[in-house]
Amino acid sequence: MSRYLKVIGVLTLVFLISVFLTACPTPGGGGTGTSHTLSGKVLDSDSGQPVAGAKVGFANYPAVTTAGDGSFSIDLGTGTGTVTGDFYVYGGATQIAYFAGCSCDKGVDTNLTLYNTHLGPNTTHTITGRIYERQTNPAVDTEIATGSKFTFCVFNTNGGRGGSGVSQYTYDQTSGYSIDTPAFGSDCLITAKVGPGGFNVVVKADLSASSTQINLSQDLAHTTTVTVNGDAVGNSGHLSLVSPYGTFTAADVDFKSSPSASMSVTNPYGYPGVWTQMKKIQDYPSAGYDKRFFRISNIAPIGTSVTLPTIDTSLGPTGAAV
Image (cartoon, rainbow, N blue to C red; front, top):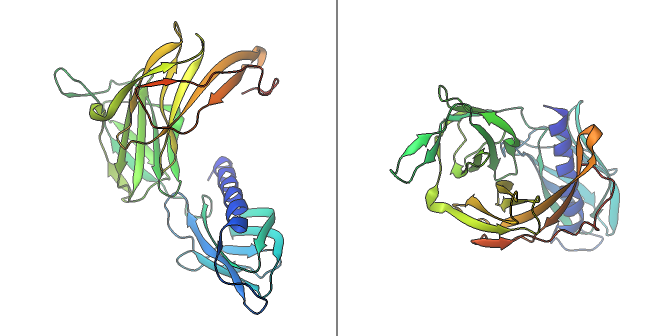
């Protein structure tokens, strides 16, 4: 697995540990005579399957090994007070997750679930199929043309993600699409965007089989045209939908001739959205970088009209390049 995915896995664990180790105790009663535990499960974030045989340790307590269901339990002993130390999970000499300075309340039982991307098996599933644009007159599905660019993402309920929301794939009518994804399971969300200026597809699917064929078709019945108002010509707008599976790109718009434009949003499951307005400023043209100012809205339902947050260029870093 790539170093990039390992880093993502570590960052995920850092976040989870900083929250759960200190903030989510399981009621177990206090007192110096009661022994309490730090327990939980280690799951693979891509497949959601338990990671058996991983070593889990905290502070100076002896390390334990996860069981077949991924569970572990570290005996914190009796007494009260906060224990601070290093927390680590590893599944091999070259696959170590190590976090310094974690804290745990010794006087209560604490339980956490760890989704770790680099301890589970390096398994991918293959999704194949064809992508269709739905026409209204006549009402037929037309396969997108060879050479069409599209992005493709797969999410599962454990936070696993496969494909890319940025890099584009190239479609070929001869074979359709074929994507190898590390995110799979019985309850997944597939998002595909054909563009630029094309359409989005958002579908739920069972991807528990090692190879699955799914044809993706535009969903006009759940597509809304949203009037998007920006604050200046030359800016751009962006919508991300917030789902239980993860946050993904829904649509983009550029204010090329007017600070008002339309955006086509496919949202069959009624997810709320986060709107972003971006202003690009040339910062380091010799290096090919841009400085960008962002304003991001609160999470809100998707309506038929939205005014993006106004950008204040006096805010934010002055030398950062994106």
